[in-house]
Amino acid sequence: MKLDVEFCGVKFRNPLVLASGVLGVTGASLRNVVKNGAGGVTTKSIWRFGHTGHPSPVIIANEHYMLNAVGLPDAGIEKAYVEIGQYMKNKPAPLIANIVEAKISDFAEVAEKVAALKPDIIEVNISCPNVEDEFGKPFSCSRDDAAAVTAAVRKKTKIPIVIKLTPNVLNIVEIARAVVDAGADGICAINTVGPGMALDLETREPILANRVGGISGPAIKPISIKAVYDIHKALPKIPIIGTGGITTGEDAIEMTMAGATLIGVGTAVYYRGIECFGKISGEMAAWGKAHNVKSINDLRGVAHAGAYIKKIPNFN
Ligand code: DHB
Image (cartoon, rainbow, N blue to C red; front, side, top):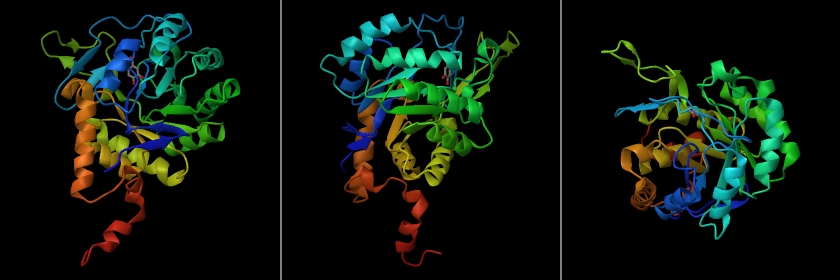
C-alpha cells in the first residue's frame, strides 16, 4: 500500500508526523525522528520569549496512559531560529512549526516571527490543558477566542495554518467550524485530554508537581477517533491531523478511516521508542497489503460512507 499523502498542498512520504511536545526541540532531534521513519515533524511549542516550565515531576506513565504537565518550557524564538534553521538546511521532511502564547494579542507576533523561518505549516496550540492558573482557560474552549487567535495568525502569513483543538469541550465541531471560518486551513485533533490527576499512596498527594496534567496514550484513542470522525463529517473538505493514542499501524489505519490525512504520533515514542515511526508505517503497509488496498488515500473517511459494509454479502 502506498503511504504518500498531501496535506494543505504539502507532500509527505507517509502520514506519520511527530506530534508537538516530543523530541521537537533541536534540529538534530527532529532529523533523527525523520531518520527513524516519520513522514514529517512538529516542533515543540515556540514562544516569542523564553518560558519556564513546571517543576518536576512533570510526567508519569503506565501501560494505559501518560500524564504530563511540563508547562510548555521553551527557550524562545531566537533559539528556534538556530534549531529550526539547522533543520531547514537540506530539510529531510516537511516541518510543522507549533506556536503558543498566553494572550490572543501576542499570537500575531509569534506567528510573524515563526513564518520568517518558512515552515511548511504553522500549527497553533490553543489547547494546553494545564495552564489554567497561569493564564486562564485554553482558548480552544471558546468559539470566539479560538476564532480570534486564528484570525490574528491568518493576518500575518499565507503559510497553511492548522489549529490544534482540545477535546475538553461539549462540541468540538463548533470550535472547528469557528476556526475554519476565521481562516484556518486545517485542524489538528486532539490535544491531551483532561487534565487528569494521579495520587501517590505513600505521600498521599498528587504525583505531578503541577497536581494535574494532560492525558495521552492508548486510553485516549476512542476520544481522538470520535473527534476526527465528527469534524470530518461536518467539514469533509478540511484536512485533519488525527492524533491521540496512536501507537500501532492499525491505530493509524483506524484514524485514517475516521477522516484524518496526517497522523500525529507522540506518546508512542515512550511505549515503542523512536523506532515507532518505521514500525507503525511498516504495520500500515502490511495491513494494506493483507486487505488489498493500493493507497492510504483510498481509506480516508471510509467510516462515514457505509459503502464497505454494503458490499459484504449477507451482512445485516
Ligand atoms: C503541556 C502542553 C500541552 O499542549 C499538553 O497537551 C499537555 C501538556 C505542557 O507543556 O505542560
